[in-house]
Length: 380
Image (cartoon, rainbow, N blue to C red; front, side, top):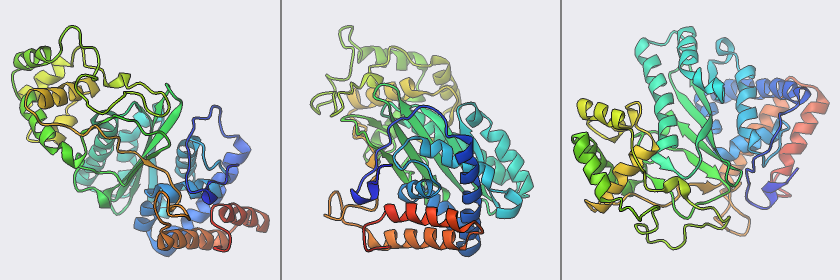
């Protein structure tokens, strides 16, 4: 086990294999006890807030007995919570999951929403939130991490959170995205509670950045044009000899520290013209409506962004929005000072929940020892 709390950062390398059943069963039992105490003591809203905090989520996974630094923390902990949380008892449920399980998210939202007696309108808004949060992280942010996991947390109060993860097969790293309904003011303008991972790309297309505002508006204007005109514009900016973005992005090499080449940002050879025809017929009012149209994928978004920049001068952000998953900052002030209040509050909530949980003394002691490993000496 890597004791990342003492060094100030966490990495999420991809690990193969599955968590053993004997461990998963114990994690479910412990997660149920800890979650029950937190929900009873602090409420469902605070529980979602904690899950949407990447540092707390990482610490929670460690307390449950899973590896601190493994990308599997995301899939295993959300899967454990899906089994541990009882909608009738806790007023919180988890929909979706890894791979094919993520495809059932809309159906599960409807099932849980009916159990919670939520209105049809609220259920539809939750389905929309689930779908658009996934669309944003798959399409509006292009850093080479297609999603393979989507967990949607919902409460009987109509609140929600999303924890989803993308994977880069090229360098075998993962990236996790955290969303919280209370924090979302716009789905397309810096909507995340956090984006964490251990690899930062030198260039990445981020259409959710505030500085991409002009490019978003121009992309909508272009998409509302006749697709034949869009095709001519795309052809005009794609000379036969130009095969990548190197000529357009003035930020040095396309290689980052890990030797990664931004092939996913190549000039699109084509876009989904059927989707653009839908856009033309629908005439979306804004970028959120544009993204919400089925068939508008990464190549289409990239093509519209390049037209907006090269022809109209409206540049998107090419800065990677990922934040390294530092555990509460570093004791030496690098990359930022320790947020003592946040750290102390997280420790207190986890420690109180463990101590109050109806579990055996040995299991309680092991959990407290794992929690102790995450924090500096003298702070426990």
